Image (cartoon, rainbow, N blue to C red; front, side, top):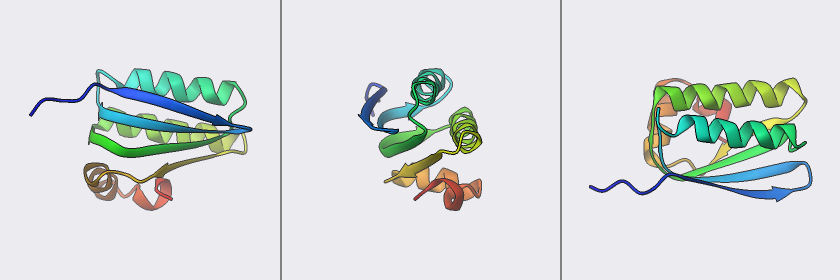
Amino acid sequence: MKDEAFTVTEEKNPGASKFIVKGRVNVDTADVLLFKLENALKDGQINIILNMAQVEYLSSIGIRVLLKMYKQALEIGGKFNIERPSENVKNVLGMSALDEMLVK
């Protein structure tokens, strides 16, 4: 099975950004995701929504990115949520007991 290219697309609204993530979130791509999410916070987008419907794989380093962003958003009075997680993402977050905290 051929992996689709990893992409992160941002849709900006006043004070909030929605990111649509596609592909695999792993050691090769987690830094790209973290960079884009942190830049959104720095630009004043304190509420972050991550659409992960098209994520085929989420590694432990990807989980660290999600937790880091969750904490950073809370520290500045914002929110960080995942919407529409793929079945694989749901399973990984469920096994690590993070689904109730991150998925809205």
